[in-house]
Image (cartoon, rainbow, N blue to C red; front, side, top):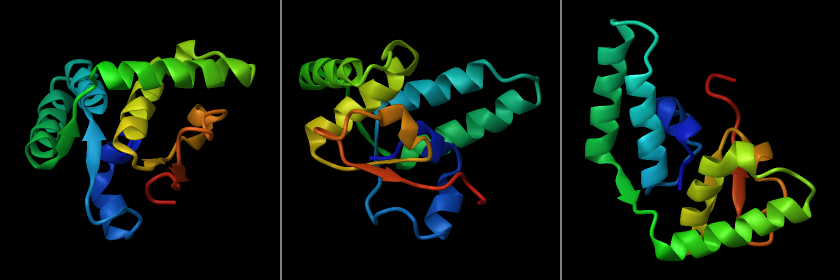
Length: 132
């Protein structure tokens, strides 16, 4: 499963050979991308982001955030709290992580620190930022 930050630069990660052959994502990541389209800082940026969003939506295998994911989310929140960290700023990240947990796949991310404390349930694959 790929995190939203990977989706934004998906071609770079694919060309670098850093992703598995089959890429899936969470519907939560798709929602984050849609937010990015709506919140584009300029009238010219919005159509560019919309094209990227539409292309990704058409080719990605998107996994729903369902009741099982909600249960896994609860467990991840408990782990984050047990590691003396606040889950509040990373709520969406933890929902994406919960989707990975339910589907029993690793989570590929360029922001591995968002998932500190989750290692009992989540396999995180830390990737570099695109272009680095």
